[in-house]
Image (cartoon, rainbow, N blue to C red; front, top):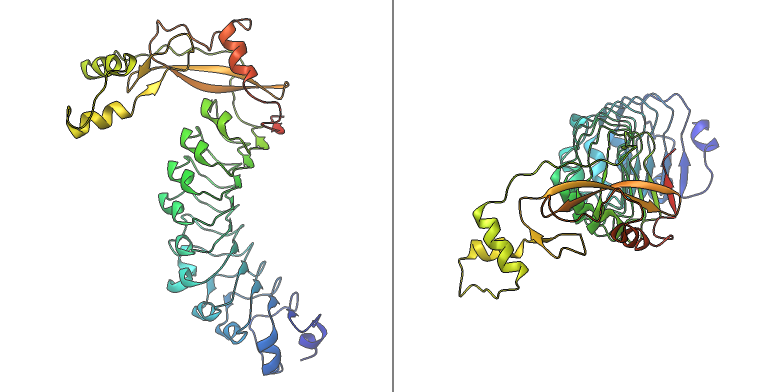
Length: 351
């Protein structure tokens, strides 16, 4: 099989791309070669099914099977115990295409962009060593809460899907550095994402965002924020919709504002938990707190001296003197904006 030999670019690499293969006949590949191959390219062929013979490459660490029209990945792949990188872009794979034990693999990088996944397969969420997951250009409508199980994940690419919401559980990924959610249908960003202390790049362009949570300024390592193509508000907006606080909340506000001591010896568990959930009003001239009843305001904050981003603020009452004042010369406004270092976001892409 001359094509096999002609594709040899080293003992550890075997390139069988663009050979018009519809199967994987390995009769002319020596046992030694099968054993020594660590990188295998099978791109741009006609493989509708990844054949089980791929498992004969026992030392395989890298496998690229992109651009084949693949509809099924065989069980044999689960016997590749050393496989770290699997690339299967631009095929016809969906939730039913994967072997049941796919989640037992030790994969660190998985790229299945340009396929037909409508849901994230549960097998993916069991890949405990996964560092990079790319599912761009599929048909995903949601991100499962179980994404938080991928504790080693550093890069998550989900651009070009139909995702409508970002689950707060995404914030439980301590190593996540690059999050790409562009070209979806996302309308809001949960404030919990500010727990992503390793996040360096956040791509949200071409969604349906009208504001960002004010907590986003606490992402101290964020260097790039892409927002172009969103219906971000172009003028200051005040939303005075306000539900009066309950008697429980009024009592809780008094306890917290006056720093009255309390403990489990004094109150039932649920009341202690409720009091511990108090949020401080962001107005430095107020000092109040709130629980469930608050006033939403959108404030434009100056980033990098160039872009003004709409960030959501929550105030304890309509009577509170807002730091989100539309007067650009207000003390509170100036103090809030100057608290954002110019190097906090090195790149903010709006246009």
